[in-house]
Amino acid sequence: MRGTRLLVAVAVGATAALVVTGCGGSSGASGGVPDIAQYEGPVGDGEGQVNILAWPGYAENGSTDPSVDWVSAWETETGCKANIKTFGTSDEAVKLMQEGGWDVVSASGDASLRLIYGGNVQPVNTDLVPNYVDVFSDLKDQPFNSVNGQMYGVPHGRGANLVMVRTDKVPATDSWSVMFDENSPAKGGVSPYDSPIYIADAAVYLMATQPDLGITYPYALDQDQFNAAIDLLKSQKGLVSEYWSDYLKQMDSVKSGTTTAATTWQVIVNSIGTDAPVSATKAKEGATGWSDTWMVAADTPNINCAYKWLDHIISPEANAAVAEWFGEAPANQKACALTSEGFCDAYHAGDTEYWKDVYYWNTPTEACLDGRTDVKCVPYSEWTKAWSELRS
Image (cartoon, rainbow, N blue to C red; front, side, top):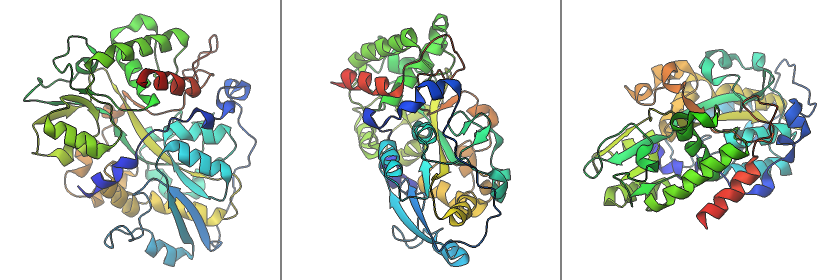
């Protein structure tokens, strides 16, 4: 699939300095966010340009591949010239948005709350985005793209993190135990995702295997729950062959047999194809996952072009094109009719049950995201510190 060349950039950043302290401070605990007015519209003529920050593959204008372009015709139609800059990590996106000069950004769940509580993005008036009505309902009003029932963007797409094994070396499985059990048949060949956000994967496994810990949401861990997750990851190190963040390297490692069990994405499995005997599925314990959100800068001078872009990028035509090029489930349910046969089935685009136990990446904050108010949770800065120590 062409989308495989783009996924190398889908990585969670790990720079603690970029964590907005408001996420874990008193404003976050009370549910308060900076008082930024919502645009009431109506959406009028464009201002002539829109400055777009995007994951690679999300705003293609033909420069990567002349046949891949869902931007140029939109520019002609709206008169909004799209000035596009791509970023490689969520932390880079947050830093650029903090510096200013950008109108819209495709923020992953580990960046969106930082942008909201940091006052970098504004609440979005979804009534002014006609295609929003066709977005799958279970992508709306999520804890990473809304606060107190107010959306701060429009959903773009989603994916789940899967458990994958080489079936000629390890029996097919639907359990994360192959990644964590000290007696795993994949010992010495386990490959976890290399990011602080992977701590949530350990938390998902503990939710199922140690219910007495009381974990209900893997991004809301009090100190005891966090310590349990770190202890599990420390014990996992004895099983690990390598940690991965570059999808191409993971593919090579699986093909060579160095990796026999791993956390992976559906697009990687599809790309390996018949080059190696692999089995991959969402684990029975549940899984982490990701969903990106198009957000509007709080101080944008190009508000009309920004809203025109939001409506365009989640239109059936553009959303289908992005999904197939990048390799993800589209957000707009009407996009599935425009994708290749079987695509939306492979990515479980409209399978509501499939996503019920997929916990999309979110930004851990001191204010527990599971609603608890009697304890403090461990913020992302501490996740970053602990991951750095684990990997040293």
